[in-house]
Image 1 (spheres, rainbow, N blue to C red):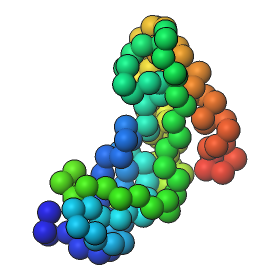
Image 2: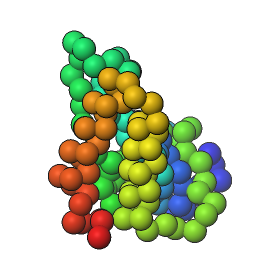
Image 3: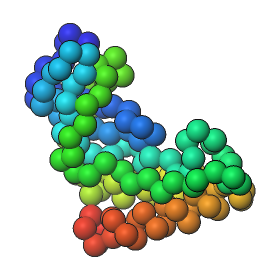
Image 4: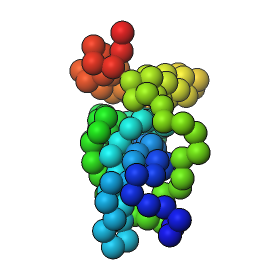
Length: 131
């Protein structure tokens, strides 16, 4: 993506979440991004055994923090066309969207993922980004 440069806002997947970030450095085949917003909250559970709850470690995954810096491969980054969005608002919307998706189907996995999401939300997000 040679049309991107330092200072550009981009959309990038990272692990199982999707984020808006600002390019702050270029290093070989990667860009260093400063996280500005969350578009999709990371999945809960074991990514290597999706939708399973037995005999797996069920991970609780927090979204990347505001201004956290991560290297992302250039090939998966796309320009972010919208105006910059507020981190707290984007985080809350991402959590609510993921919660609704999990609540729409009553399965053992979805119930366990909802519990994990609730723990993540209460231990990290509430008070800092939520009113």
